[in-house]
Length: 72
Image (tube, rainbow, N blue to C red):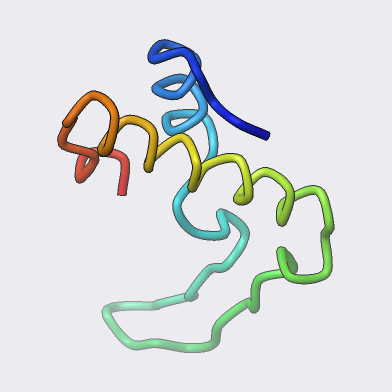
């Protein structure tokens, strides 16, 4: 899917997280107890969303020359 609108591209970059939001590290008093692995690789919807995020970032950076580090 091609992104052709600057506002839509910004909205997608803000809406879709850069990394899986479900991965967690459980810590107690600064010590790592265990980690909960992400389930995003098993969810095809997340893969499609990430597939929309990258073209949006590229559109903003290449077409508009916008600094996209705030979305990372």
